[in-house]
Amino acid sequence: MKSAIILFAHGARDPEWAQPFIQIRERVAQQFPSTQVMLAFLELMQPTLVEAVAKLTHNDVEHITLIPLFLARGGHLKQDLPRLIASIEQHHPTVKFNVAPAIGEEPEILDSIARWVVAQHRLPNKKPANQ
Image (cartoon, rainbow, N blue to C red):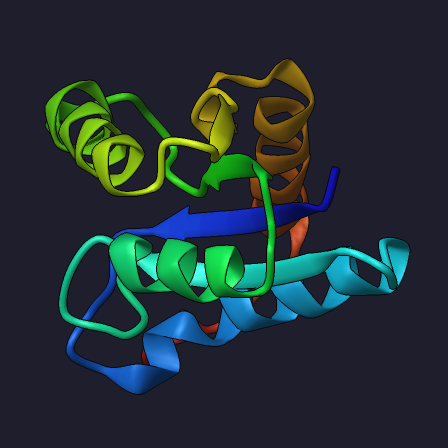
């Protein structure tokens, strides 16, 4: 069975916003060289989740691990994502999804963020990134 990974993010008007997600996609793809790893966006950027799945199914993918790159399960993950997946499953009934939790629900992610915050606090006289 051919499988793929979709990293699912919100999307933004500014294309630079996607850079961290592109880097994550590249790092994941290096770990799985024989697996297609794609980014997909809820809105404002391409490809959408529907477009990404269509491309993957065109390449005979039957199993997709969907990783929501959201810190928390808000309305987008509670309502929008299930509706999208239900619609996709109607159009691509042979595709099976494994939907991971939001990344912010994982203790190791929260620990990493907390360590980074502590390190930032300990840096003397560092100017904010937006100045």
